[in-house]
Amino acid sequence: MKTYPTSHHGDKDISNINFLVTGGAGFIGSNLVKYLLEFSAGKVRVLDNFSTGFRKNIDDFWKYPNFELVDGDIRDLTVCRDAVKDIHIVFHEAALGSVPRSVNDPLTSNEVNVSGFLNMLVSARDAGVARIIYAASSSTYGDSTELPKKEDRIGRPLSPYAVTKYVNELYADVFAKTYKMELIGLRYFNVFGPRQNPEGAYAAVIPRFIKTLLSGSRPVIHGDGAYSRDFTYIDNVLQMNIKAALTDSQAAINQIYNVAFGQQTTLNELVADIKEILSEQDPQTASIFPEYGPERIGDIPHSLASIEKAEKLLNYNPLYSFESGLRETIDWFIKESEAEIATQAVQI
Image 1 (cartoon, one colour):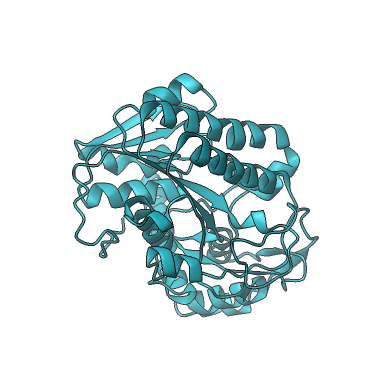
Image 2 (spheres, helix red, strand yellow):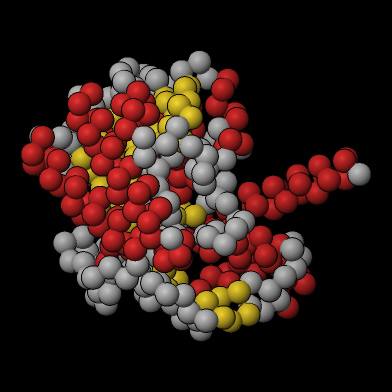
């Protein structure tokens, strides 16, 4: 398992700060928890119902005496109230992601992403939590064709998921003004990295493509492959979360920020890049070409972020480019694949 070599909190002592990470068994959440534990935060509590997160993502954390787990659902207000007791800072990562999932089941997406978020806001307000950093989404930009995307200019949402994430921003703004709370929203742009789930109908595109190509199969691209994304490596996301949580700048609080690298990559380019890296180990990968299927309803055609606001107000400095992050991710998946094969061989 990767150990984070770089501290994003500088000289600040976080040993006296208690953190809650909702969705802490998920991809982004478990990486945040790992960072906090490795850098000796105070209490590090996870709230997760394991609907999309995995217990294996937190198995290694039990060795830390300051790690706690609340096995529960953010749709339950009582659970949320219990989870925020004695907590100073909340990282709210719990959500039902995926545009297609929200198109297929808008009711559940709304219950989790909107009602669940409201439960956390009310619970944090009543418990006197100092600050909430919450996961927003680049899907909020909707049908806006302007590139790069800037935080103060958005379009109309294209999916139920995008609606839920925009509503989160509206609620956060109202709670900040009405109850004098400190909230910071982070609009994630296609986050990827080690420990991301490659399985299932709603798996993220990078782990799915890597896993498919590793198995010698053809990846499926929805559309003609010209759609583009600002793929963002997980360590850059960690940096933004930590900087947002610990900033002393009043100008930086109660803001929305893009979390990205600031580089555009098409899906065709993505497949080509993955093939090139994998071909260094297995030259036959170069002869695998993608299949093309229908476009998905609700997908944004192009996404590219301006990160100027984060650079200015939070001193954000993304350390991993798309290319360097992709290599780290592929290396991790190769090792995972080799470990799975070794385990299967032992069982046989």
